[in-house]
Image (cartoon, rainbow, N blue to C red; front, top):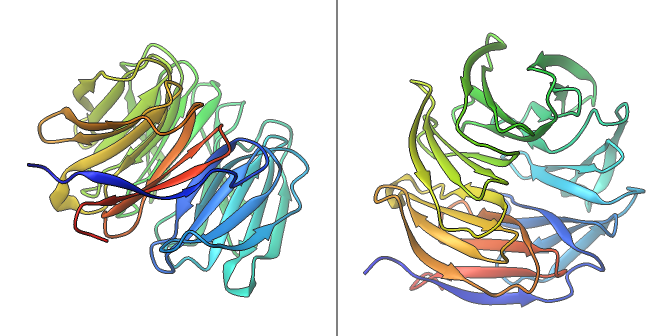
Length: 304
């Protein structure tokens, strides 16, 4: 039997409003959440205890991420304000970047921890230096709203998903567009590279999840199972497991076997749409974050 994931820690009122962003720092075992209540919170990844709350955003927080070491967090709010926080100093604010309206959406940190990339309404993928907070480059697509971004683990690729269903893949070193991936009929709200850095997973409002071979620019599989928008996909960082998690507007969290291209299990533990899922660095635990204001932990059977 495959590994099963058991609900463990539950935080039913993690925030005062819906939780739209979640990230898990691999080095410090800290979970970061962002909410429509304008706050970012840091939680102990093992116990689920709240460590501290980061305040300053004036509108809802739509995405959060951390650098690989877990020393810094990046949060983005609806009004295109990006904030960089020092997690080693109780969340001290390092930078507040007020991008032009619509020019900062979901932000993701690069694997080397030096930059973060943020999508925009104009179709540009804007790259910032995480230490200085300065924009260092802007990658152009086809003038479609960029709703999702993802770096490959080896730092070679940077992908972004657009509102028309198109995915653009850039070579990070050269800043050149290497692939334009099609297949989705509606907005691509979420992207995640698998641990092999060659497989890209996407989730869309068309209720489908696509698996792409990035090296060849081809669709390897199209997965169905969600009954509504797919809002989050996350590849298990343990490459030997060949798993991913997904969540959507159907209130479901699903675990998939990427090798078999099928659902292993479905969890219905939320009462509203689920905006985010993420794994710990070992791939033994995952967290879901929902519009129902809650965050919930799952642990692989036998992992504790």
